[in-house]
Amino acid sequence: MKLKGIYITVLFAFLVLLISGSTASAKTVVYEGDIEEEQAYQLNNYIIEITDIFPEANTASYYVYEKDKEVANGLLDVNESVEFDFEEGGKIQMRLKSVHTGGVLPRATVEISISDYNAGDLYVSEVVEKGRSEATFAGDPEIVITKSIDKSKIELGEEITVTVKAKNTGNDTANNVLFTDPKQEHFVLEETTYEVSGAVPKIDYGESVPETLVYIYKLKATEAGTFDLKAVTATYTNSAGQTYQSSSNTPSINVSEGNKQSANVETVMNVDVSSIERNGEITSTVVLRNTGNAPAQAVRLDILVPEGLEYVEGEDGIETVGGTPRIYIETLEPNNDKEFTYTLKAKEIGTYNVSSELSYEYNNGIDAGNLKGSNKSTTPSINVKEGKFDFLIKNPLYIIIFIIILAAIGVHIYRRHRQYRY
Image 1 (tube, one colour):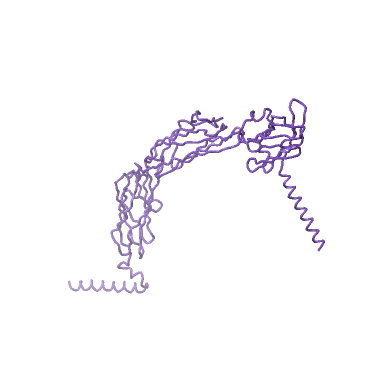
Image 2 (cartoon, rainbow, N blue to C red):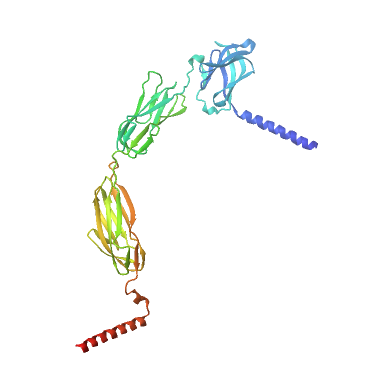
């Protein structure tokens, strides 16, 4: 039992050392040296000002400011420390190590350390010779980007003018301002009137500073609908080199169909009979009709004849390509139609449909290239039944021969009868 208690004590001591070691490792000394009376030490936007040093009393007074705002003050004895909050949850600790006379003004030797903060992120860590009045602070620039359009309602194919401006409403200069405007979907860039070249070296702040012109360009609508333009973004730094980012508004545009054109080719396929004997012929018609408002170009219809039927012939305008009947029309104008007739032969008993595949192109008056259209169609069902002499095919050969002999005898008797009669 005693041995177990010793283990627990050792383990507890180890944990205490581990925790204290971790705490110690999180603290970084950023300055150890002298500060004269009326001097100050600056850490980013924080100022530690040593105002009065009393060597005979081994004390020194201090004030801590965040820019112009006082956050702490007091009097320290030698080997006494003070701690205050810093940026991003960090802590600053100052320990008064000693005070000295001699020279023009008395001096205090201090140790300034930082914890819970990456010391490498300090952009200022130095003695300010003339105190707080000489310190310069990094502010927060804020680039407000405005994206405006000249029209919010347009028709397909029309253009809008986009203007992008920026203004710094913050309290520090924005440096190396880089603007990015992503490509707009549903629109094409027609013309760029103005565009900033590369990064803007700096944009000053203040009420009297005018807006900075960033872009002027025209977009052409290629699709109907309501769309939000994408935001322009800017990345920049303040006077301390810290990075910031801003985004613009996203204007909305309603694009109506307007005068957009399209071709719509419809196919109608008919046959003259719904039932036919085998080896009979079928007359079929195809009507191609453009019900759109744009010409259909390169109109191609492939007639797909099923097994059991046979393509015999067709009128002018139908050609056979690779065994497939095909109709080709270079241009089919709007509200026009063309009719074609062809002949099929019923080869096998069964029920069939003749189908077709149609393809064509057209220009909608908006896009530079042609669009494609297609459809499929089919005839009503065709029932092929037995022909008059199909029974001969079904019966055995000897029966057929017997029938032929009987037919021959019948013909012979008939002829002899006629000879005797005359």
